[in-house]
Image 1: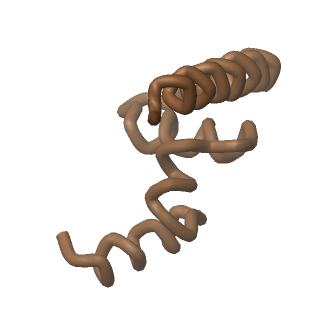
Image 2: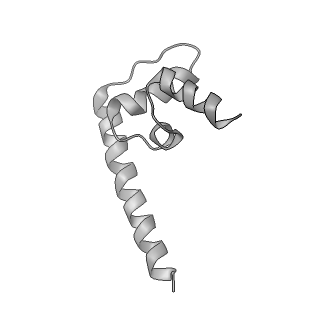
Length: 72
């Protein structure tokens, strides 16, 4: 897929880049991939998404710190 096609598809679903789609920072950004991937829409409380984002952000920071320690 070319950059132009993928960029226009991302814009249609409300994202500026593939990074925004794959690494969401908000509940709305996290709900969109679920809605696109599921045949039947599933309801999850916003609290579940908020907790996921909190844990995901912490784990990404830990991984980043570990990688820095091993880079020479």
